[in-house]
Image 1 (spheres, rainbow, N blue to C red):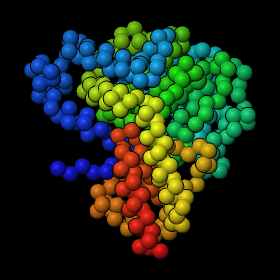
Image 2: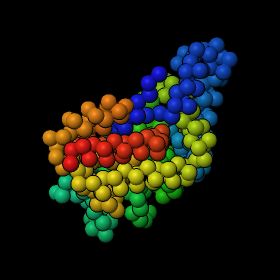
Image 3: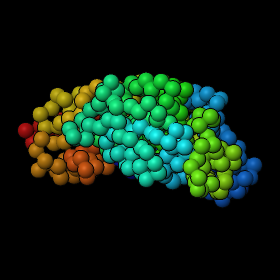
Image 4: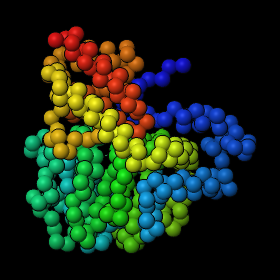
Length: 360
Ligand SMILES: *Cc1c(COP(=O)(O)O)cnc(C)c1O
């Protein structure tokens, strides 16, 4: 059997242990006589899977009791709509920080529903850093402040949180959730598509402080109304049952690894290994301000772009897949989510050094 070293930004690599368990339980989930795919979402078996996955996520992230955990669909992109629809009603205004492609998309979508203001952007410099929070032109009456915790395409991550006072912080955590401990109580709402660092596509996680529910704009569809979803325990309609099941297995796997604090240490070591390789080389370049470099998604360019094709072909021959950078950035990108082992990163670094020597 062949298992690629998969550096995809998402859908991304999953822990082999989890995939093995899914395979073993595929035809008969724990004596139920059926696959999780075939179960009623309101039946006893799936209700247990759903509740356990919620509880394990609460344990892993230390989610306080006054927060609701929702398992929705539509990806992070639908949350770009759901967030303003549900929260613009708080004061009629919201502040958005633009640090790359995803936060810009979130802003544009919010602007369709009301007064979403861009209060900071590094776009003029090609998104190489996060503008200092002192320079943000914050509104006095914003109902929330939106940011993207980790820009998956640009490779920029918030390593410290801005102090937003009493203004709820709303964060797109699609590509950094569960990669490091966070203090959930500092956020009003957190959302993340599952297919980066959690499980299969089709599941979107929302963690929302209870007092922020119930402010949806008139005309908000029930499926997009977080109050209605919370009241129905995310089951107004059929949820993405199989994705929730696999995500639940990933949560259990993470607990067995020692939880998020342990995985963070590994993630720091993995990212350091690759950034050191890039910084020590003459061929590879990462242009992001070192203070905000992402641990999860590491873009790098070849100073001789004519070698891009040979680099990617050689990588594939060595079993390393999906290293091509996003079309808007070019070059390469290695995503080092939780399921990527340090040995996998070492293999990439060994290949990069060897490739550089060959082409010196
Ligand atoms: C992948 C990604 C998205 C889009 O996710 P979908 O689930 O495809 O809608 C949004 N934000 C960030 C930070 C992402 O990494």
